[in-house]
Length: 103
Image: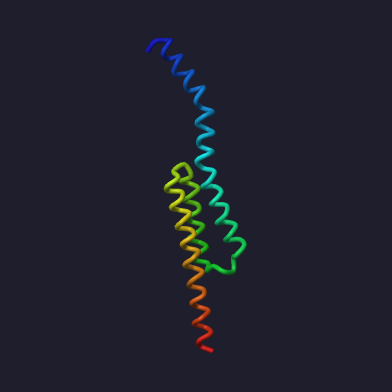
């Protein structure tokens, strides 16, 4: 590799680094925003979800943070977290109905 070629590669890397950094922020912004929304939902409606569903949802949100650069995996983790919360909410309603029917 000649000095000229090496200098071109170095210049390319130095000039493209800021672009790559801002591109990453754009990809992860939506995922991070949705993670924050689900966490806020868990905090606001804490008593509406079972402990098991909140635990599963938080585990999925942790996986989503890990997969923040892969939009498809991140979105899948967030959907799984919401699904866990929905199922936990539904189970709680069924348990309340069962207790009311006993009375």
